Amino acid sequence: MRVAAHVVEARRESLSRLLERHRYLSVPELARQLGVSEPTARRDLSVLAGQKRITRTHGGAMPEIEVTFASLRERARVARQAKARIARRAHGFLEAGSCCYLDAGTTMLALALQLRAHPVHGITVLTNNLAAANALSGSDQVDLRLTGGRWLSRQAFLFGPEASRAIDLWDIDTAFFSAEGMDAEGLWNTQPEVVEMQRKVIAKARRVVFCIDSGKLGHSTPNRLTTWDKVQHLVSDASPSLLASRGIPLRRQAILSA
Amino acid sequence: MRVAAHVVEARRESLSRLLERHRYLSVPELARQLGVSEPTARRDLSVLAGQKRITRTHGGAMPEIEVTFASLRERARVARQAKARIARRAHGFLEAGSCCYLDAGTTMLALALQLRAHPVHGITVLTNNLAAANALSGSDQVDLRLTGGRWLSRQAFLFGPEASRAIDLWDIDTAFFSAEGMDAEGLWNTQPEVVEMQRKVIAKARRVVFCIDSGKLGHSTPNRLTTWDKVQHLVSDASPSLLASRGIPLRRQAILSA
DNA sequence: GCGTTTATGATTGCTTTCGATCATATAACG
DNA sequence: CGTTATATGATCGAAAGCAATCATAAACGC
Image 1 (tube, rainbow over the protein chains, first blue to last red):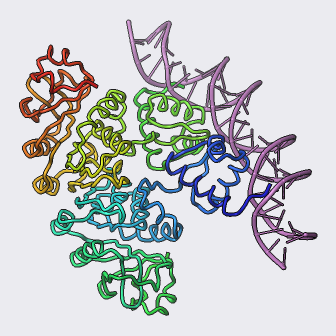
Image 2: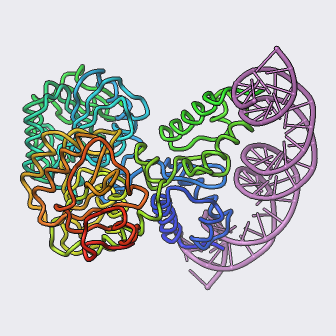
Image 3: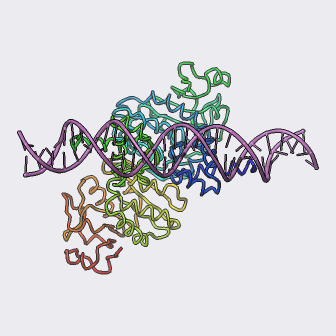
């Protein structure tokens, strides 16, 4: 019999969360936990797999990306595919032997996962992003460095005098950033702590690459972290013409479409 | 036909690494990548699964659950239950409102998991152990701080001037340590970097708690990290009488049996 | 070197999983 | 309130995965 739409959606949500918690569940187990028949569980899985929110396997399923960080889980869901595409394009900026900075946020996590899947020899990655660090911690091709500091679990990043000092100490060739919003005036974030840190890195880095999905276009928040003149490259799923029409003052060559 | 033993071992190693990279692979895919038939791939999987190095699923396999850090995976296997028991007992030393230091190693990971399962209100945890940090990163009861520094993936800990400075900066009420060996003379570790860091913390901490399973009793390695007079408490699955018979010069009250 | 051991690939029968189809009951909609 | 749309569970044939067996050829032990 038919069931209310919100019930179905809620069940799929909890299915998704179940998978993130257990990393893998079989179809019978899943059906049992959700209180539905196996065919229904299969259908749910098929829908979620179609949305690329999970990965199907024979006899079960697993989460699409590994987000063990609760505060990132929500954010990792929005614009998932755009972020993955952006990460694939941004990967080209990762040069062998260089030192890169990875910002906080799920887009940067996507980039870290991309780097894990396609290692770049002799690269150094400095980050305050624990999830990204986690992803890269197993790679012996990557020289991984953490900024240290206090873990702000809400914002999911490391912050404090330790973190700042790490920025002072290390050379940064290419700095990768995300942001919560972008408009004609520049790039924006909500949290002042995040912005403070980002500004410091931008001042230090030889090259600044912003990775932002189109959903953030035209969105501004309390703190501007930089104006566009400091930005060498923008990787986005928004087309150059769309960006131009919204007043983003970047040369066409500086924009990489994902 | 038969194949040299080292070839088999190498293939299983690379199978294990393949799974870590891809997080999941089907049997046919695995067989293709390894250049063997499906039955052989299945046999390899069965062996690795028997060693708890991977997790089998229907039609494929994935890396062993819970330990996402490759270098810890091996070590997490030995004395698993002893470590869990030790962690449960050591949990009693975690005081509300105090600042604790968690050392590198799988025993400390076990303690972190214990803390995650049974949160202690208003506790601050400082660590150079990324796996432990990972475990605690979601808890809003724990004020988590990382030392920062370079990630030594082999030893699975953060090291460098950043890390040392973090020790200088923060007060430490209780420091929890593991070690590779203990005997009548004191506690031992192989890596000089690890020892350097541990000594620094011991000098700073108000209270020092060592958590060591009995398998490490009587084992000494190149670097002594401390003598017993600096140690306030030892948590171990070895009985006090056994420890005494091996010449461990600790008062009975300082030993907590797990 | 020679005999033994054993890792491998092919084959076979069995089990599990999957996708499609279908009747049904209930939510959604006018 | 009546009609339509659709989510569900059951069933069934097809496909895939698996464990076991077996012949073989190469590595290992003496």
